Image (cartoon, rainbow, N blue to C red; front, side, top):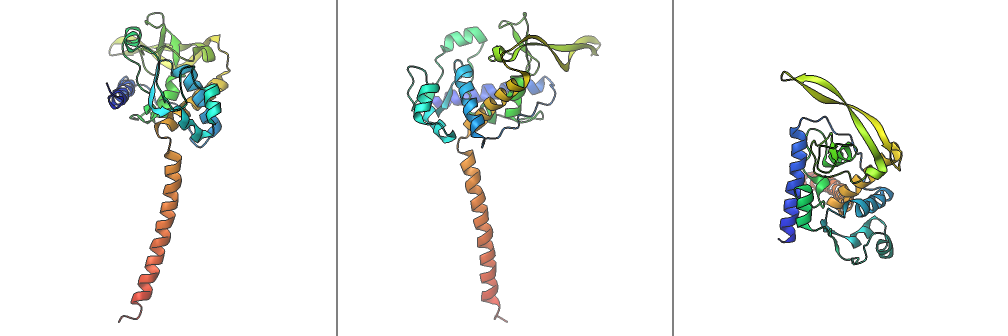
Length: 254
């Protein structure tokens, strides 16, 4: 399978996950409030991505050396973000065996190159979805991985950042739905085991990761916006100049 097919498959799977979350009738997602001009956030997000996501998920359309665009030197990339066998010009490809991945999770983990730009919905943007998803995991012994998620019920991916966040338990209330008593998430959480980060630190770390994923989906987006502003200013100036020339040309015509 070539890289284009892999990317399309990953986007389709990611879109399917988001669609499934909407189909389940979940609440609106929390706002990630990403800012792709914040290079400190992007650099921290890149570090989190390499350390916690790249083991299972590839980013086949992203090269390590593109991280120079967020203020990293090649030496910093080599020293802090590359594995032993990787080269700075390589794409971010996971070393996980696809056969083993499918056996463990039921499906190959999708490529994350454009995950944050995947289809948004009524709950918010793709970045909002990921931000909410990574903050709503809880232990569930009935699941094969031992984890579940209030944003995406019966999720196949275990909690990648649980050591940072710790373990939390959602608070459910019983409500009558279609004549049956069903547990409904109240939006409240209780701490079971604290993580290595405070809640505020963890939320910021997830926001940095999501910010990086948003930037990775289109590394040239900041340049595109900046050029677009100058183009619009030029067109306004050109329009004014053309209007004045037209007025001057026709002023003596009766």
